[in-house]
Length: 112
Image (cartoon, rainbow, N blue to C red; front, side, top):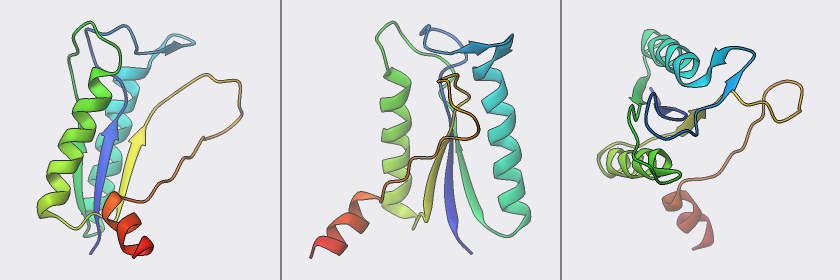
């Protein structure tokens, strides 16, 4: 069994950073997608922590910091295989955008 963190991008209200593309509200869409991904992983016998920050204050990226802090707290007690953050963006590309990074503990292990 592997453990995953599924984070949904942007806040449901507050900060204006949530994007809207072709009348789709990113905040609502990623919450639905994230819940489905977490449910699927659990059905397959994996651990899945769903992170949502539903309200932000006025400064930029507060939700990013909150999700990062929550994820760091989870990794203190759980061996997490992968952190996934879901966004729906309109950057001009075609298809999904994927960015991967190792957790700090894995980076330190590889360095030493």
